[in-house]
Length: 189
Image 1 (cartoon, helix red, strand yellow):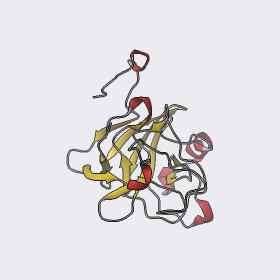
Image 2 (cartoon, rainbow, N blue to C red):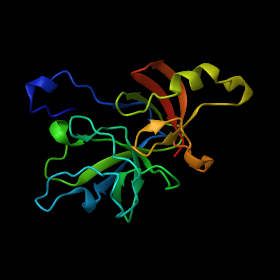
Image 3 (cartoon, helix red, strand yellow):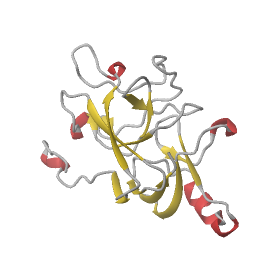
């Protein structure tokens, strides 16, 4: 449940919803990487110029100034997480919380949840995925021939079809592209 503090956000929906996860999905308790906090404790989004603890090549996608639930997350050290920078970094799962901005679930806390578990099924709402090329990939998919549409972590942290360099680990399999605003996925990590 969203804790709405601004009336203009009263109709905001969760951008990630677990559909089938009774035995497959696991909410993993972790912490937001300290690199994502300013010295005053406020949230700081990863930028293309950041190099610690991982190198980013693009600014992380934001929703109302913060991270949206459904972004691909990477584990850095111990139980510390940050948005996936794209490339060959191993994906861990999908962010369960809104972090920072006007929809912040955490406020001053650094405790986050990350959904993971192969076979678990989710509904993901825009802007937590990159729709670029997704319609074409879905229309051309021949699942019967064993060619599912695989989704990868984009440099912005979003799920998308681009496999940079062809060496990325797939995060999810597209089950259905319901519209340019809603997809259904099966997690592979």
